[in-house]
Image 1 (cartoon, chains in turn purple, cyan):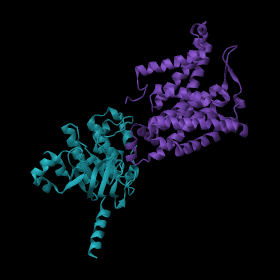
Image 2 (cartoon, one colour; image 1 turned 120 degrees about the vertical axis):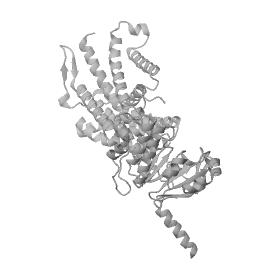
Image 3 (cartoon, rainbow over the protein chains, first blue to last red; image 1 turned 30 degrees about the vertical axis):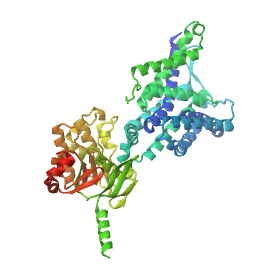
Amino acid sequence: MDLTLLLIQALNGVQYGLLLFLIASGLTIVFGIMGVINLAHGSFYMIGAYLAYSLTAWTGHIFWAVLLGAPLAALLGLVVERLFIVHLYHRDHLQQVLLTFGLILIFNEVQSIIWGDDPHSVAKPEFLEFSIPLTDVQSYPAYNLFLGVVCLALAGVMYWVVQKTRLGMRIRAGSSNPEMIQALGINTKVLFATVFSIGVTMAALAGLLAAPERSVYPGIGEQVLIISFVVVVIGGIGSIKGAFVGALMIGLFDSLGSTILRSMDHIELVSGLSVDNLTSVTIYALMAAILLWRPAGLYGRAQ
Amino acid sequence: MAETGVAEKLDQRTADAALAFQDVHTHYGASHILRGVSFRLGRGECVSLMGRNGMGKSTTLRTAMGVVRPSGGEVTHFGARANGRPSYRSATEGLAYVPEGRGIFPNLTVRENLVVAARPGRDGRRDWDLERVLELFPRLAERIDNWGNNLSGGEQQMLTIGRALMTNPDVLLLDEATEGLAPLIREEIWRVLGEIKRAGIACLVVDKNVKRLVEICDRHLLLVKGEIVFEGDGEALMADADFLHRHLGV
């Protein structure tokens, strides 16, 4: 195992982590502010990815797909919030899980009807169709680097909105005491719908941006959903900062962990598990260790 | 003819009032908390709401604000019917609520706790801003960048009152604003209440300190089991020692 490989894996880890942050940030604020467990959150990532596929085919360029896809996702978020999520605010978690699980089934079926069950690939923009050479044999794809930079910029915007704007103050205030923010003259219906829509847009943006790198196939929503919940739990429910730190930790653990495990001889034979499974085990072990140390997550408030 | 005259007069008084309750009932689930409460709070008037624990004082404030919905009767804000009006509308219509237990936002700084509430008043007034609130509470100015949960109980109380003022209210609903505070801090809160009253904001004040309430408030209401059993000025209230002892334990 050489240093260049580790560098590549670290870059991959950071990029995967930033992507996870885009997804998990929406999940954590919706959970933290509205108290809603949204299992369908991964579906918005999936929808983003399929929008990337269709809109790129239509417009000829992933950039147009992103620019058109983001407002479409925001609108979808508003519609889903008004039609379904709004009924969940004062209900218990079991009902939330049932309804949002139902939404997953519906979204997946719609995906199957519209796009079929074959995997699709999305073309990268031409000017990013190259790799940056690192050594004689190793290189790093330019699109992955671009993806990392865009995700980082989006995370920066998210941070700025949450920490520095009045909307962000309201979101944070609403996450600690929604009844009080309402009594200060803020319509929480509007606030909640806005927050939900922002969360959906971020998840869809992650799907849109990642599509050229990761390709588009059925079931990608559920894949990211589980790991996003791990991020939310590690970071602390409702904490954007926690989601950021948790996402980067998972991203790095996932890519570096699998590299290190792969470099160990006979590890699959000895453990009887594949490297992918072993990597998952280490991620859940990390989550368990963090929860033992801080039961409310890294930046969560103890109840 | 005479009867309509009286009714019109009453309506006129209700319309003039900043806040009025007419035979208001409020339930929490099956428990009947307010049982036909009627009172008026004039514009710029300061009225106390006394009574032992569990008599319905907090529920009265929460019903006035629209945090809970009355099950009967009529709540009016500046003459407009406000039953079931959500609390954010009450806030934009000039009411501000300082809840018991304070309800500051622990994950916002002192500055953010104040700024998040900033809004013009009912008639577009903006005379209460960050600067004026900090002038009123110099202690908060010293701690402006601290997190809400790093404040002492007294500072938290100042913050909730300051935050309520940031909405440029015409009516302030104060629930146990001096509860559990050190004597010096209590005096500070009473001083500020005096200033708020002088600024022309109507106040409905719930507190246990009868002496201070009598000093500061124009009129007094006494709640017993969800009904108002006394309404009058301080002199009338203090006149009957037996009555006071029975209902307030003083």
